[in-house]
Length: 138
Image (cartoon, rainbow, N blue to C red):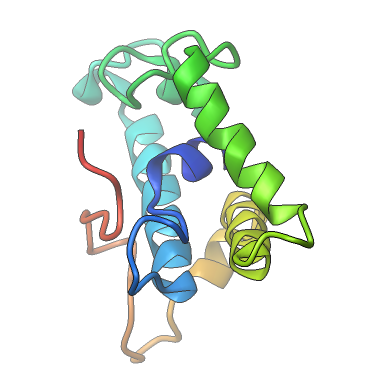
């Protein structure tokens, strides 16, 4: 799922006003949407999906991920560029890219409870909000 996040969410080079917290929220929103689609895959044209990868690979779900883990060269290169920047101490945005990659890992591995705001608290509640702010458009 991390590769989906790295490919679909605005990276530190996308805008001058890049915000790591917003990127993490966008990644969490994507994960929640994938999990929601898994609950009723037929409704989202992913009939027969039994796990997150099935949803990601289903036609019309995540652009260029239909043959996952094999991706088109351009998409693979985009992801590789992010990983290279995150691991290059000479890149001026290395810290931002390292955090971007870390956020992708967090969003992919944290428990559902960790993603929910406290009861009565403000913030993103994936049970109520279907939007994917910060996600790249087609």
